[in-house]
Structures are given as structure tokens and as C-alpha cells.
Amino acid sequence: MEKIRGHIMRIWWISVVIVLFSSTSWGITIDELATQFAKQPLVRADFKQARQIKGIAKPLNAKGSMIFARQQGLYWHQQQPFNLVLVLTQNKMTQIVNGEEAQVITEESNPQMFQFNNLLTAILNLDKKVLARSFSSDIKGDEKGWVLTLKPIASPINKIFNAITLSGNEFVEQVVLDDKQGDKTTINFFNQTTEPKLNQMELNHFVP
Image 1: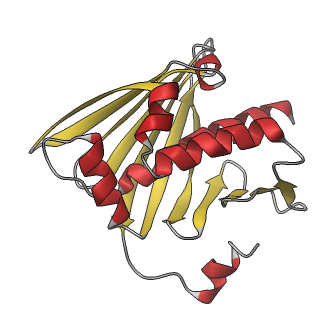
Image 2: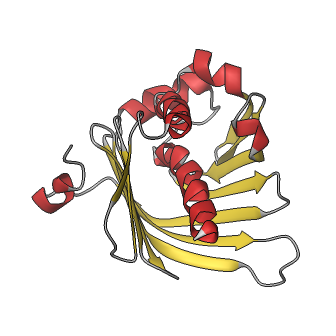
């Protein structure tokens, strides 16, 4: 169970950067990214994840799909090696592991988790004032691609990660999480699309 909790916490921070699937312009700045994000109300993608744990030769692999809907939230569905559904909205986090009863986390039940949620919201909106208090950032890009590196400078995120690095072109293609335990998680995204719109079943994932 402790391993699952740790895995879910990392999924939480993976979700922080999902918004960067939005298409971008070249000569990237934070302002340009924010403008582009606002034009992408919905992004779908499949993912493959490899977590390299210090002291273990073979990485732990996972795969699944995700939906980021700017107005509703994030739906993250890991299908292998075990079934994990994670739904993030403005007011709560819901997780379902292997089809068991849903666990709902709110600000009252877990204030620390909601501290993470506030930072997530700042990243989703590219709130430069909030992000400047938590990260130093370096953005590089040209016509062949771009790289964004976020280095935590404030608690609690600086106690978890050394750096979060994203790279891609029209969409984010890879996210690398370098954590304080000496582990590294690499997530590759593919089949990115902004269509179709959410159907009723998908909208139900985000019902309060």
C-alpha cells in the first residue's frame, strides 16, 4: 500500500505538467505559453511511463491515457501494471485503485495535498507570481523543438524533486521527473489530439 501511495503522489506531480501539451510558438516565453494554453480547452493523449528506482536494474513501466479539459480538470487513467484512475478538479482529488471504492481528498481532509493543488492551479494558469515563489525556470526553443526546466526552490516541492524537465514541439512529448530519492521517472506522450469534445460519459468523470 505504501508503494501505491508513493506512486500516486508521483502521478499527482505528473499531472501538474500535463497542461503543457498545449501547442506553442517558437522563441518561447512564459507569456507566449500562457497565451497558447488558453487556446487549448481540451487535450487527449496516451502515455508510457518508466520509473527508474535507485538500486533496481529494471525500470517500473506503466501505460494508459489521459484527458485534460481546462474547464473541468484532469482525468488520468493508468491501465498497466495496475488500474489507477485519478481525477483532479478545483475542489477535490478522486482516486480509484483496481476498481475499489473511490477515495476522495478535499481541503478539509488533507490540507497538505491541497497545498499541492494550489500550486497545480498556478501551473495550469501559468501564474508567474506564484510559480516564481516555487520554481526557477529555464525555457529554450527553436523551430525543431523546445525544453522547459523547472527547478523547485520552495517547500514542499523542493523536498520531493530536484527538477522537472519537459520537451516537445507542437505538443509535449516527454516529461522527466528527477526526485530527491535518486529515482527518475520518464513519461512519453503520443497520439495527442484536441478532438473530439467531451462526451457525456467523460463529463460525468468531473461531476462534483
